[in-house]
Image (tube, rainbow, N blue to C red; front, side, top):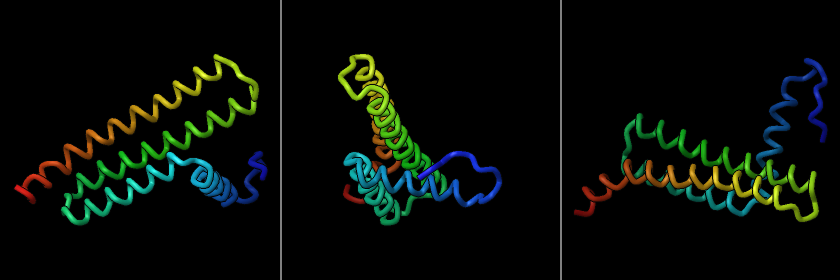
Length: 126
């Protein structure tokens, strides 16, 4: 797999590399799998609870951000493992910071989901 620039020969090649990257991340990352399952559950809840188009936009952006952060975290971890396969406290700190970005995105998504879904669930059950 080479992602080197080869001119304007085939514009689809970039998409193929991107899709391959997503597939590889899904195969290798347990947290990404969990987040994708949660995304499906949230989507089903959105359908069941008839969220508005604006709420859909917010949910889709939030899901996209969390999944994107997780994939970037995976890329950073793999680069750092490649550059410094032995234990290195600086590499550990870099990985922790990258994981922290995912954590913030995930916490934010819980807050967004709560703002959108809790009022609808309360009306449904109370």
